[in-house]
Image (cartoon, rainbow, N blue to C red; front, side):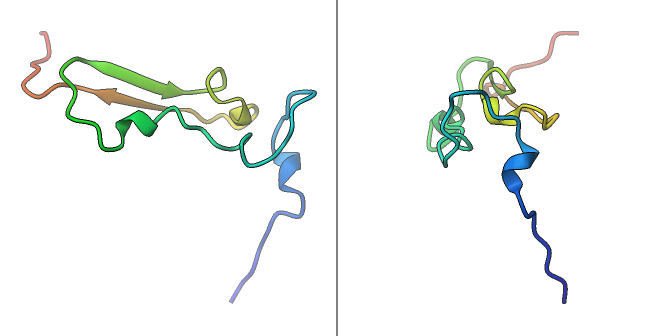
Length: 76
């Protein structure tokens, strides 16, 4: 059995000055519109990068969701 942990997880993040570092800093709610929503009728893009979610600063991480409506054929 092995146990590991980060002794100071806050050192892994670049926090902007004058910002409270609590659970809200690490919570991104921009994708909640996807949960329980009906299928998309138009092409939509939702993304979370540093601009939308400042907790990603220095993490080299981002996420994007591309929604294609049913029956949408790609253009050649």
